[in-house]
Image (cartoon, rainbow, N blue to C red; front, side, top):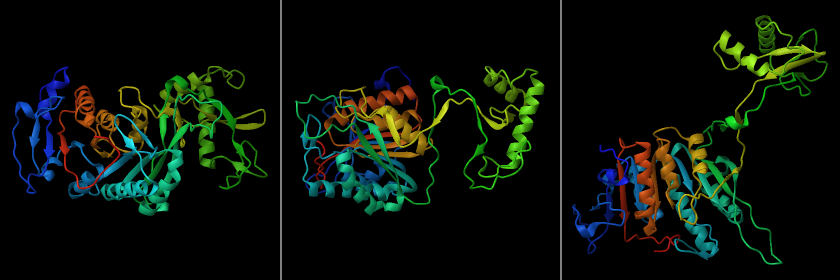
Length: 413
């Protein structure tokens, strides 16, 4: 493996494979000439052995997403842990890269064909993230429910959509400030971990809170400091409460200061006590103060994330690609639902964000995109990230599939 500060130094570790049919009969040759170079300098190898192409750890394919996924089924059926889809929205617009014009029937057929392919590739514990506009979300969810089953729907996440448009004096409707991501699992038995993120810049200070709660669902109605709830209950069981009260008593003996009166620096004292006594970062604390039983909520630099992801702008700003996805969005998805070595699929790769973030997080990936920019700007962006992250121990195949039997109008040639 050759290491260098230049992306070109890792080009020998890639191959751009052009799969094609000659006179109705499959032929394959290998080798390169000066005419077999594309703009990014990657060597083209002519081959039709797709099974060999698909054996790489990471694969970038320039081609029709439906046709390619159909061929991937022979090698990757049931192996994809996470699929992220940001398909055309049927917005009725055209630009340099996309022709996003469909009739409702054409769009429904297109989405259904894509999802049938994705469903066959997902592993039994796989998760699908389908990003779509609010206006299309209802019809798309109906298709998703039909293919994946309504019982496998997990969340409708909202992500910020910061469109800066100029409006006339009168409008027909308010602009949409967000898109949605529909989350489905392959199987209803799949359990997702809590989504927790650290943010040291927003450290929440410790606090004392009432140990009593007016609800009575667990039956925690024992005597504590001579107090037994007449209605409602304590928050935790008796064993937890006794242990927490003992820890607080020991802390007061360890630090002979009146923390019943002065608690301005209790957070720091609490952390010192935890580290000295058990090496733990958190120990339960319980006290009786002014006739009220209180439990201590330690300082925390983490927060639980809900389905409101408007803290992330879905648009990225690292390339000139019009619909670039924000790296933060993909990073949150992958760190939540995947582990190192899992395979990620993005059949509408665009500028390459999913492949870039997956590489950075040591996930394997398959990216599919039809536009010619896939062979130039997208490939270059991915290669730069591979060298920076140092993932040269994995294999990478970059190739193009031509003469598809199915049309994908999501991209202009």
